[in-house]
Length: 253
Image (cartoon, rainbow, N blue to C red):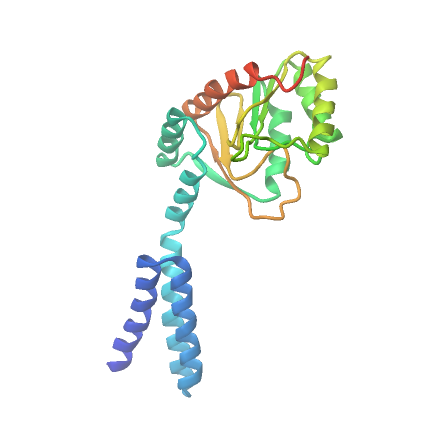
């Protein structure tokens, strides 16, 4: 009986550390119990039981709190959004109208959505670079424009001094877009103080998260976005950002 009480204590301490401190605390407590178990116990079945108690408790609570962690990450990505956009996106999230998009899947997803778009595409990013605005990107955007899709691109994150650095990759990207805009009037590129990272497809679906759509293709850091199939949320983001793009052209068309 004492063994059961002890295992309950091991599992309980791991769970309490996780819930009342953090996920890392929970893992640390489970790890400490593992070290203590291996150092102090010499009976294999008991060692196995205690390791299961520690790590089993961790993975069970981790599984139950996974959605909650995703929601917190999601809400953290909405800092730079208009208040009405935040409200619409959070409402859509509560109704479970979202799925997760991670790392390198962002780039291929963006190109596929541009290729499938029917009416409008909006891409908001802090930065812009020819690493993304390459021949493939230009070709897919050009085809979308030719079938009548309106394309809106917005960028221009400013630092604490109110400056946005136009790097050489950015200059090359803008030159490619400027050339395209001279023959395709449906392309709109705006430069303004923008911290939003969003992809809005046909005003029906919006993808928001940490990814800089127009500049990041290397994925050296962990990137995560949420695909939200909600027309109200998508239209809200589109309608609040479109005037900023149109009123702050990055170059003369």
